[in-house]
Length: 264
Image 1 (cartoon, rainbow, N blue to C red):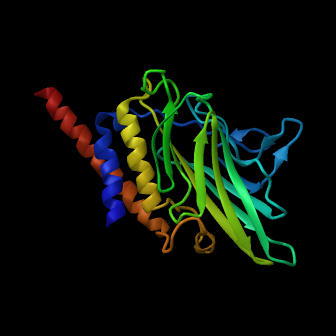
Image 2: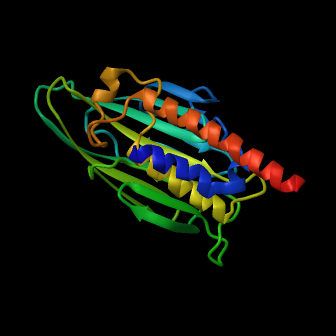
């Protein structure tokens, strides 16, 4: 029940901001253009050198080039499934396969170039969740969306934001013939008129909900079983379906409550 309570609090904390959220842009690079999803091999496309499955923009110029492995995969074969889910959530499901004859101990780095261009204002950095926005110079968010970056909940990943950069490093131990998967999320919160303090609260609560109950809809049981950066048991996809139904119900109640208040 813990993750239900956290997810519900995400909407309640957002207040009126939730009903006025902007819509993230489907800017996932596919090799020939941009779309709401990419499924295929990892790697970079020439001559642009853009990484397959990376996000360019995302809405409000939040990302310059986000969500790729900038230090290679140490000989492991990489397959990517990157999607813009409902509710402004980018999901990165990356599978690493050892096609060699010996155990592979490889450190991979999930990287993002942030649109805040060095002016990051980090409000939360704990337990696999970082919440950040573009600083206006006076301690408030400006222009870009507030982002909740989720790198896992079992301590496998080490994540940090440095000026203009996001890095989440993972040490993978992969047996010959074995495949393991990493799951990363980027949630964007922004009022249609610009980021607010309510958006920071929404990003924080939603990030905590993703830590407690990662969104797995559309992934097979086999795919879920390969995830190594979230503690078992990982919730079933139907869990998030129930949460989304709860989100919709709470949203309707909030709008009705505001409507009654306005009439009064």
